[in-house]
Image (cartoon, rainbow, N blue to C red; front, side):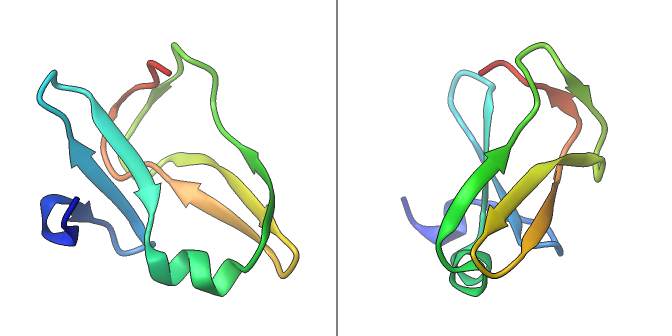
Amino acid sequence: MPPNARYYAREHEWVLMESDGRALVGITAYAQEQLGDVVFVDLPEPGTRLTQFQKLGEIESVKAVSEIYCPLAGEVVE
């Protein structure tokens, strides 16, 4: 998937809109490189409603713990 198919947020998250109306959220390659080896990810349960820019979860690596922010409002489906 080309990088220009995604919408990027300032905090290094991205969104890819899928054809069925769902959105896939991830972090940028830069953020992944800065984190190093990821040891734990804390994400919300399905059914959780989030507002744009609300804290979505945390990523813990051997270097640091970083917060993930929701780049758009919606409900976690999986």
